[in-house]
Image 1 (cartoon, rainbow over the protein chains, first blue to last red):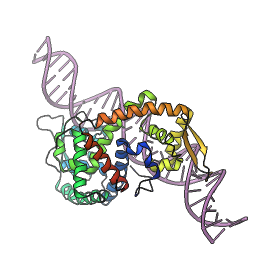
Image 2 (cartoon, chains in turn cyan, purple, orange, blue):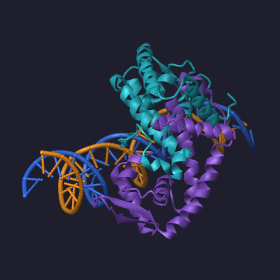
Image 3 (cartoon, each protein chain N blue to C red):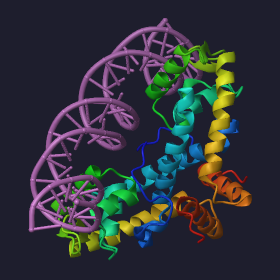
Image 4 (cartoon, helix red, strand yellow):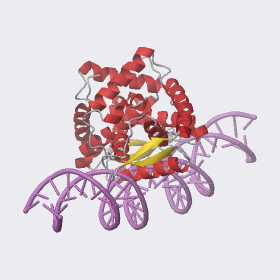
Length: 156
Length: 156
DNA sequence: AAACAATCATTGACATTTTCAACTATCCAT
DNA sequence: ATGGATAGTTGAAAATGTCAATGATTGTTT
């Protein structure tokens, strides 16, 4: 997702409108701006935000099924197929048959995939630091906490 | 944007992965979930998130040009054309030629548009309240403040 | 144990959205 | 006045999102 905004650095004139305080718009804009940064950070590794997410989860040890990936990443199952196809083609992940449920396919990382992930993770962390540079350490933590809470209704 | 997540109510198993703390993913998921709520809230008025944003700004008195709308909403100028076309066709906004710059077109609301906006705004506020129901008043305010700060680097 | 509905991954079709390049009209700087 | 940039518009191409159908497998009901 690209950003056409040339003036993301300071509050534009229109931010004064009531909509400048809408959570929906704030989320959309910050998400769009962040996506640009993230995808730019990942381009060296041939990854994009989504394939990075899948790779990360494949490396997590949680042994996610494709269905779980779809649910967690808010994607259609068919989109997960495409993402895993690509990562598997590049030798970064593998599909293994589910133990309890043989319909399910668990996506696990290869050694290659874990090496790739380590490097990509560093780039992503730098990008996030960049995006939130204007916030203090406490503010960044608080922002994440609030996002998680709003999303999952966990006390945190 | 639709959400395929069936378990948005509580933290899913995969949230334990390192990615469950990534701002990018948190923004993407909360934005996606919010879009569903917002678009559902607007369907009665024949609006969607984006046309509502354009209508709001047309009603703001700020007299935005289409270029400003594109920048502010992180849209391609051609997408703004489509949105304004539709709103104008329905008699909710009008294009008026810019005063200083005759290339520019300022998007202003009609009386009809303002009535529509008032009703839609109420529905949107309710949707936002719903989405952030789990947060306290202070937390909601703080979340918005942090989003605005990260986005526009205003002290706030 | 046979039949049933439900679920997982996959495919392919279709719709929507994004991105981009061209074009006209207008602006601004020299 | 000329030339280069910008605003809006159009249309085409690429990327993404959505959805229905399928085969394999599961759990459930008779």
